[in-house]
Image 1 (spheres, one colour):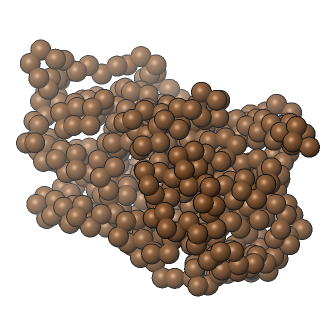
Image 2: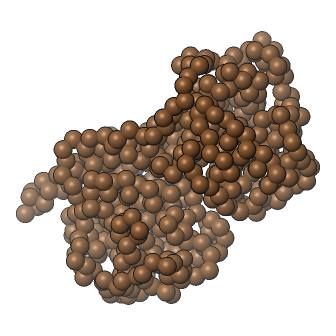
Image 3: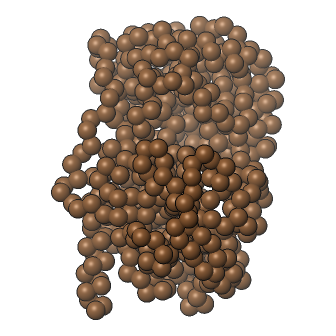
Length: 535
């Protein structure tokens, strides 16, 4: 597809095809506002439900290692829930965990099972009091590379060949801790499991006859943990479980399907994504099972959030702090970003993409749109890593437009925060996006997201008020939203009003306490009723 020209960017409307006008909505925007207090409101009431002991199980946590949003969620959500619950985290003891300055105290032991090796459980207490159990097994987890493999993401050909053993061991450890068989002084009343790497945990509990309730959260249905059926015996999976109502998925073993099938309740990370995955387009072959869960009232969407560190007035990562009524600091961050990425001084808008560089994220659309953005006076910066093919394309794009396009292959938290703070617009043309955190970070830092209307992007961006949404994953639709962004940028008053609206959004982890607490109580009561009936 060729470049789509940007037309009429100095007028109030523009067209991308004859007879079709693009207007900029101004409803809900106040053009003259005092500076806002962006501090979050207190946590919502949890309806008087009792505190519970919860084991939060994950393959990554930003305290030590992360690949994407799951690492951030696993660090922030348990800390938010700790205001009401006795919640502890279970992760593998990766090399980064063993190399950290935190002291590991050995507190439990787990025997070998099938081909899963014996391991020990260590306990780490973070500075803020969060307790993290770490699964100590050097042969499985202490390796150079990411949590899933040798590459940054470790998916596909980069994944470790024994990932089935590695994450079955994590799942079984969670089940054994929940059953009280790990020798710990603490025993959870409920498991909160995250993505395919933890998917076998509720299955092991079921097969061993333990009635411990569990929540299984799908962060990205596209990554399912698929393995050859011949691996079942090595993982201690019963032959009777390999069928369409168990762990079998088109002739393969699916960790993701196991989690969905055997967990007490399935959640996703936005309301829209919870609906989308019940359709063939987004269901990745599991839409039928997920529709059944939805009909049973066992599928729901609880959105992610961000924590208090994302405050442009206090964030120490930034070159200069700023607020919703003082843009001097934002301009200083923009100057820093331009300098770091070798961009020329410019009065035009700065577009950014902070993302894994993979097909899902729509990087190809941004590459197609780049020429039109540059020709209209915009600049682009990219930070992230992913598919090597995409990384090469981005490097070539930067070579083609020196001074206008900058690329950093890799990830650096300090640089990413400065990019959010310095950019005017964040590009998120994701083909699907279960929740997304980047758009929340960008909005809090006054960068307006331009995103595909899907999943959590549709739930957290108000079109024409806190960002721009487009409907179809193709260049013309994407360019229409970019044209709107250019128009708004030319109208300083409207642009600043949208920035203020974006910066005062209320997407914080504290808002998750009540819905999760209510869900935990509900499935615990259901488990109690089932136990009484069985007894």
